[in-house]
Image (cartoon, rainbow, N blue to C red; front, side, top):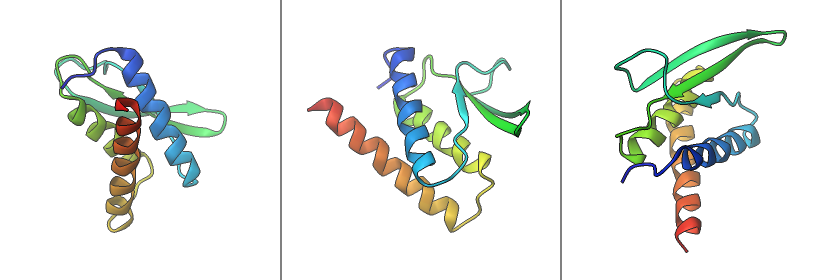
Length: 107
């Protein structure tokens, strides 16, 4: 099933940002679509006064919801430069957060 709108994408981004912040990790900014044509996800670092903030751009249109969420979660892992087993643990935790959010929205 596809995301029905960018509002749904924004909700997923807020949910992930909250979950990542609660774990004292860097929460990237999420945008759609990527500037590069033909790619599903890009990650760049935007220079700020604090340093370099990660920006994860995701192509939403025409893609399954699970693929978009997977790209968002992977963007968090890459932004935080995590390696296994910490990366695997975080992926699992974020999938649980997103599944819980989905179940609450469906009820």
